[in-house]
Image 1 (cartoon, rainbow, N blue to C red):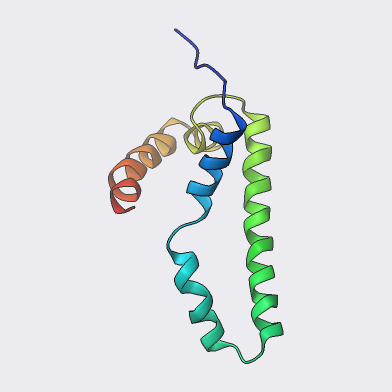
Image 2 (cartoon, rainbow, N blue to C red):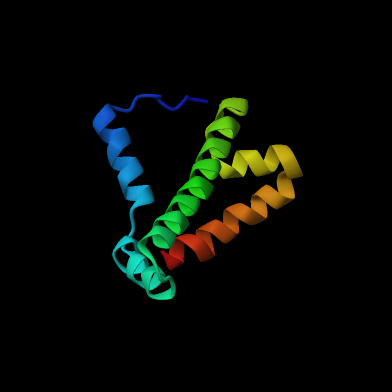
Length: 102
């Protein structure tokens, strides 16, 4: 079985990250959050807390990628943790529900 070529340029990596992280919600969400909070300090506090939550998720995926250096992403992690059936169901749910909705 041929192996995937592990080759990405810096520009390619940056474009993948930007495309994955920044969606159209970045233009709408801050104004909605600001409407519910009273001070600029509270807005920044909530924004930093959200950034911390995102950072912990990113670091978790980084650790999983280091533990399981295989092609497949979340499918591989679920297969290792919960078995074939859960990974299979996630794969189909991702394909039919998540990807079709984005």
